[in-house]
Length: 235
Ligand SMILES: NC(=O)c1ccc[n+]([C@@H]2O[C@H](COP(=O)([O-])OP(=O)(O)OC[C@H]3O[C@@H](n4cnc5c(N)ncnc54)[C@H](O)[C@@H]3O)[C@@H](O)[C@H]2O)c1
Image 1 (cartoon, rainbow, N blue to C red):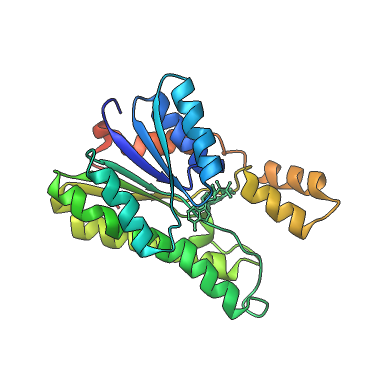
Image 2 (cartoon, rainbow, N blue to C red):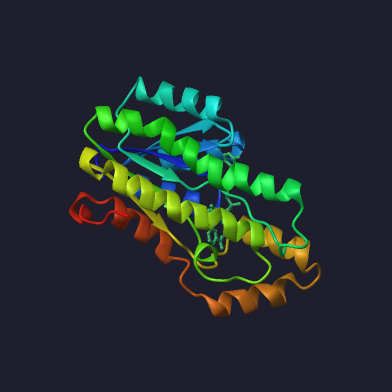
C-alpha cells in the first residue's frame, strides 16, 4: 500500500481502528473520518508515533454535506485511492420492538452513511484513474441473527449497494467489495453486553467469543481486498 491514501470512516474505534493501523503499517497514509474526533486523533497519533502517516477528521457520515466537504478537502490535497466505509451502529430488537425512530437511525448511519461516502468519493476516483471501496457489512445482512431486525435490514442494504456499485463502476477501474464479519470484540460489543446483559457481561462475552473465533482476520481480509494483486476481486 506504499504511496496510497485511504479514508477510513469510523476509524477511531474497533474494526475501523484495526483496519487503519493495519493499512498504515502496510505503508498507506490513512485519513480517519469519525464523528468522535478525539478517538480519531488518538489513532492518528498512534500511526504517526509509529512512523506512519495518519490524520483525523471530524465527520458525521449521516450528513451528506459534511461528508462531501471533508472529502473535498482531502481530494484537493491528494489522490484518494481507497475508501473504507466502516462507520456503523448496532441495535437489538425484533420487528415488533423496533421503534420507527430506531429504524430511521439505523438507516441513517448504516445505509445512508455508506451511500454518502461512496457518492462523495466516486467522482474523484473516476477522474483519477480508479480506486477501491470496501464497505463493512455483517453476517446479519445475509443470515438470520435473532433480535436484529433493523440492523439486518441495514446490512442487507450494504451488501446490495456493494453489488450495485461494483457493477456500475468496474469499467472505471473502481472495485467495490464488502466484508461481512461475524462477532468481533470491539466497544460495539461491550456496549451491547452492558445494555442487554448487565452484571452478566463476562459470561455472555465468553459465550459469544466461543461461537466465532475469527476476529483477528478482518484487518488482514481488508488489506487483502485492497491489494493491487487482488484486482480481480470485485463485487
Ligand atoms: N463488532 C462486531 O461484532 C461487528 C460484526 C459485524 C459487523 N460490524 C460492523 O463493523 C463496523 C464497525 O464496528 P465496530 O464493532 O468496530 O464498532 P465501534 O463502535 O467500535 O466503532 C464504530 C466507530 O464508528 C464511529 N461512528 C459511529 N457513528 C458515526 C457517524 N454517524 N459518523 C462517523 N462515525 C461514526 C464511532 O465513533 C466509532 O469510532 C460497523 O459497521 C459494524 O456494523 C461489527
